[in-house]
Image (cartoon, rainbow, N blue to C red):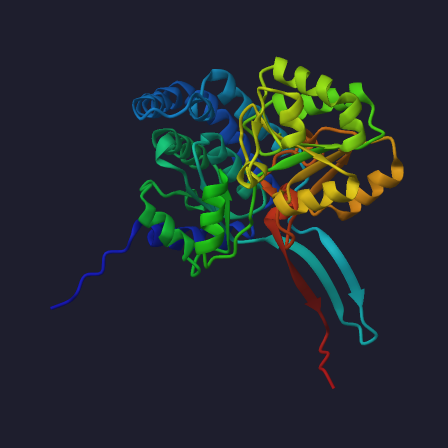
Length: 421
């Protein structure tokens, strides 16, 4: 009697994506851009279908009591779908990094050695409550000649299925294989764990979401991980800081969009500056709806402030809550940030160039700012166009990851009969 082995959805789609990645290796920039244009067009054709499917996710989310901020991230409407389509057209205009010659050496024996950018292969994306990531990850992967396996959360299941069906309808009109974009529709924990260990087919796994998801993937994945996103970002106000500049930067970093990873979560103030300006600054922050959780210095001058714990200083609030601490100088600020930060984005406000240089050099983060808001840590702001995420690690890529971050390198060696002696 023959035993019938039923292949799981994850392994089946992993195999299809791997095979598609070999085909993607030889696709031209023109073929890839044509596919992107077709996807952008199909999004607008299918927008009512996508919106109706998205409404199912929103209804389920409301029944489950998901917070408004999460429902907002899930929600798709005509303007957001239009923005997705526009972003894809912008991606088409970006230079294709695949094939770029990074190094070229001709040896004395005539051997030509070239180092070029090539696709990574198969990219796995695991993400939460963000259906826009479905489009971002798929189109960025296709532009760089990669295949992609998408695994969204249950909170956006119907939206993700609709978006991938739109992508596949578009790819049917192109030279790009449909199998280059795969969605794991089963959103159970079991499929996530299987994806973590799909080393036979996945070349890299990229998590997009909260700290809990990112920590889980880093801890349990045997597939190499590009760690992204968790942001306990700090603004440090040094003794020489201009008050108006400090206020404007802090307000922008905290309130412009509190739920994103490059928003400020912690404020540090030098003691002398705090004595002169702290009360005024804290009152103005409170007046715009910011909840202050501070150390004893802060609580002594702001009665409504709550005394901060170690956990508060380490927290990524993603809301209008801000931890505040008074420090002796720039060196204590650096030590605090390197202790509690998440290596994302950190800022110093000062007119002292030496203090700024010490801060920028010593703080361990992907992006460090002098007299500017942390909110600028973004692929579009850095001139990369679209991004797959913001890497907070040090290997392969760090900071906003544009198209080059989705490539690897390969050495091309050409000879005419050389042998090594």
